[in-house]
Length: 417
Image (cartoon, one colour):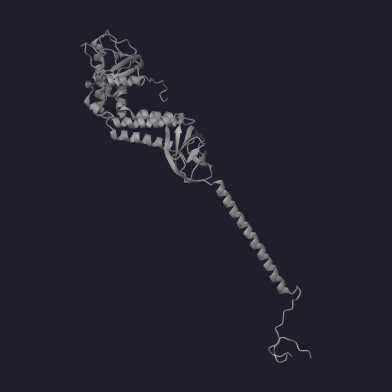
């Protein structure tokens, strides 16, 4: 987009242009139809007196574009010094002229592969070298795509070097097996994450590019930086995937033969998720879901920045405890995120127990009413005695047995006076 050109995506560029059959296989399996090799790896075997054109058919519809090793390595090293930069430009001009003079009447296409990550000084030196060839002095500029389509020289070698010919120094700099295992794990997480997103292109495109960059040959000789980059990509992706998670749930107590268990799923992403499923699994037959069995699965669809409570109908047939495992799954059955476990205590209440409880409550109510009525009567009686409103009731006097009573002591009879 910066250069306003349409890129060609069917070229593979192995490090230093070193190739063997396995490298070609990897390149073609990735969709490349052209492999940029270098003449110090793709050596000529026909003892030609001139440098042939870069294009070489190597079978299977694949073309090896062989860059000239001498021209391609002229700009390596420190080009910030004026002497080194000037010498590189002079050598470049001289060698291009020598290539032309090898066979003046045989027009050929020569490819130069610059340093993969050139410094500013190297780029400026290359620019001055190309300016020295301007004016069609003995060369004409040619696009790389056009160079790959030039008719190949019939005498140029087309045999791919064997694995034994691959430079040992370069093989020692290859990414280790563990690096590709980590990359595969990251790619698997990305594939699983993509299936639940409503706007997957916001995630797939940048992370897909990051996964490709983690396999770049530019990491050769920089194993620590390569590991840090892979870890950063993996951690960033894990941080996004963990935004969709199950909310931790405490233990649950169920009373009765049927009940509902709610489980909450949270989505902290800025976009919605769907095609996600929540599954509950009971480890005991005393707790079943929907009378079907010990496993139940329900779909989940949550808008960005929201949570959703998913309710599962349960049926119990015995008292006790059951361990329930909750886990999210994608549409193809791949587990998503970490599982969550909680305990369900089943306490079944039978009709007999309900009758006993109801009878006890009735007795308590009746006893309360009786106590209330008795207390009310007692309060009313005490009130009447205290204010004198009721009729006076004479009390029986004690028998008078004193000397003034007119009756002899020790008798209860009255004496008539």
